[in-house]
Amino acid sequence: MSTLQQRRRTAPGTLDTRVIIAAGLRLARGADAPALRIRDLGRALGVDPSAVYRHFRNKDELQRALLDELLREVIDSTTIVPEEDWKGALREQARIVLRVFGTYPMIGALAATLLTRGPAEVDITELHLRGFRAAGLEGDILIQHFGAYESLLYSMAAAIAAVRSSNREAEPEDILWFDRTLDVTPQSHPLTAEYRVPILTFGYHSLCLSSVDLILDSAERGRRRLSSGTLGRSRPSGHTWASKCPHQDLNPGPTD
Image 1 (cartoon, rainbow, N blue to C red):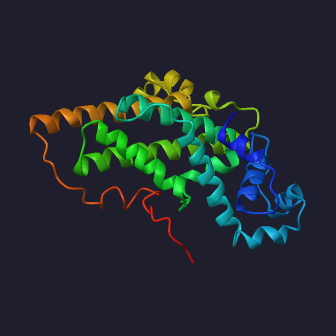
Image 2 (cartoon, rainbow, N blue to C red; image 1 turned 45 degrees about the vertical axis):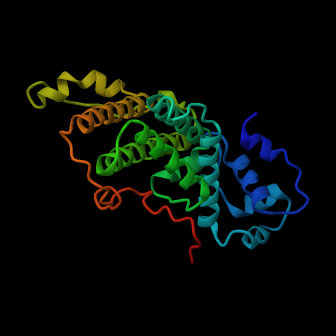
Image 3 (cartoon, rainbow, N blue to C red; image 1 turned 90 degrees about the vertical axis):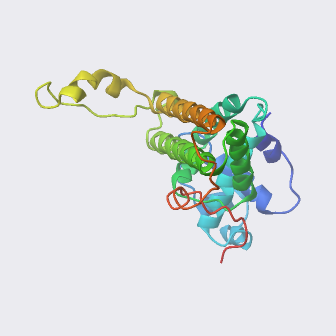
């Protein structure tokens, strides 16, 4: 039984944030889940919708909490310790994120742009950083690989979730990366014509995992360069990645 399922079966005595989040995830589960509305949530809880606003200031805050709960599920589902198998751990994380976001596509689709500012977001950041530190990276090269990994993973998992929420028949593994025709000729676009078939049959799911592997292979090469002294051991500057990654604000403090 998953952590989310365990939490949902807890019989609450009063309405609180935990109960609201559990009900919100029940409503958001599956490709056929409608857009989350506070009045539907209130109905599911058997309370007036205004009661939800006593615990969450607005819908945006509720969505952040729901997304943070998905990240908590990812962490709780992790079985591989980064310090024992860093590549295996980061690959496992990618597969779990794809699965969890695909299970709750309406919430997972928010991950490309929404910061949760919650504890799970910070915890999963630490977990991924541990993976790249265990790979032997440090300084700027660690941050660059970490940023590439998280940006790729969250954006592609969110894209798959968004497609699934709009196409209820699609399974995550079957969603095509390039879901339109390519009307080209060898004369007009020689390379596109040459690679037309693999482009049109490349799935988002397999593309994400193969792209993660490219990042991990690059991290391994970076470790070898650090070990050989051909790459400087600079401290993280924080400006190259942090200015672009949507998850750069990792302060879980209060937001007004």
